[in-house]
Image 1 (spheres, rainbow, N blue to C red):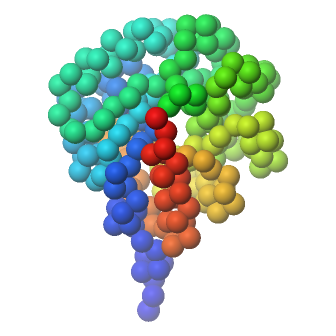
Image 2 (tube, rainbow, N blue to C red; image 1 turned 30 degrees about the vertical axis):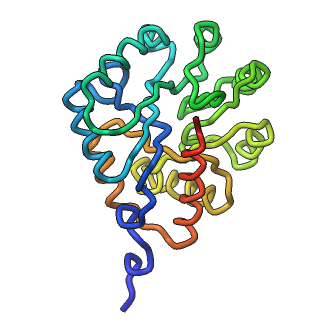
Amino acid sequence: MFSFFSLNKSILNSGLLEDMTDIHSHVLPGVDDGMCSMEESYHACEYLAKIGVKRMFLTPHIMEDLPDNYPNILQKHFKAFIQDNLSGIEFCLAGEYMLDSGFSRQMEAGILTIGDKFVLVETSYMAAPPEMRGMLYELSISGYCPLIAHPERYLYMTLRELTGLKRQKCKFQLNLMSLAGIYGKEVQKRALFMLKNGLYDFIGSDIHDLRIYQQALSKIYLSKSEQERIRILMNNNQQLG
C-alpha cells in the first residue's frame, strides 16, 4: 500500500538544500529574538553547512522595539560574528524591517539590503498598519524593491489583498517552515496554495532556533511539482548579489 510519504520526498533528501542561499535568518547572536550566543550560532552554522547551505543573509529584526538595531551597530556585531566562524558559509548582513512607526527613521539611517535593492520587510501578525502601502511606495520611489517576508503568515490579508501587493511590484518570500505546519495548519495551507499558484519569488528559512528548524525540516515532504517550484525559488535566491 502506498502512503503519503512514499509519494512525496523529504526536503532533506531532495537535493533542494544543496548550495542554498538563505535570504532570511536570525543567526546573528544577541541582537533580536534569534540566537543568543556565538556558541549557539556557530553550532547552528555547522549544521546548516552540513545540509548544503553555502551563503546566508543575516537579517536581524529592525523595529521600533529594538532601538539599538541600526546599521552601524549591527555592522559591529556582524564583524565579530564572521571573525571566528569556521563553517565555510559566506555571510552577508541585511535586515528584516518592521513596517512600524519607526520605519521612516530607519530609512534615513540607511537600509541594509539583500543584494543591491531588495529590502526584506514584515508587518504585524495581527493587522497591517494603515500606512503600509505608503511605506512600501516610499521604498519603491527611493529605488528599492520591497520583499515581503512570509506573507502566508498574515492570515488577516485576503488573497486579493496579497495579489494587490504583487501588482504594487512587491516580491514575496516563502518561509520554509511554513510548509511544515510550524505556524499552524492555516498558514501551511495558504503557503502551499501560494506556492502552487506561483505567488512567491524567493524562499528563506527564517531560522531562530536550530532545534525547531531541524524539526520543521524533518516534517517537510514535497510532491514533484512542489519540488520544482521550490527549486525555482532557490535559483532566484542564488541570483541575488
